[in-house]
Image 1: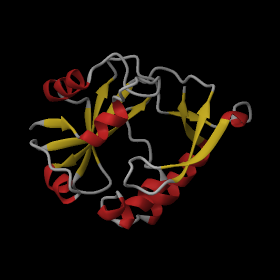
Image 2: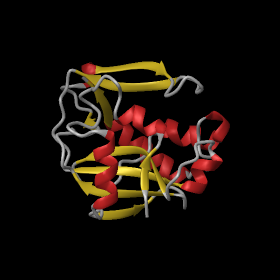
Image 3: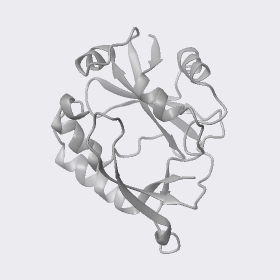
Length: 185
């Protein structure tokens, strides 16, 4: 089985100008090589048959992706309308500024199958393509953001995967994201 970074994930996980909330102390090539050479700690089923998550112990200084929202830090939340790519429509996002989460215990790359990536117009020369990565304290998945579920339900033309919304998973995601937020340096 061969895994590669998709262009989408490469720009988000390894931006030209490194940021504190992306993968640290590792090049894209070293990241890809490690995922191909080291068996995962665990493999989790994704939200659809074409998606799986490989759990790896964090070998970098990458920090957790999310921070719990508390009365003490709520005033540090910011929001704006942003698009992930030039082709996508902007959506409302929120994040913390002025917080520094702990170093993550696990890196959890999100993998899509070659067939799904071809369907989405992003063909790869491998079995699986990395479309994102979670940085977590526990060896488990963080619920997908509700807006990502919505985008997926809109279909490939709007930057999604074409998977309908699972209402129960959506409710769990809302509960998680009501109480947690991403952060930016």
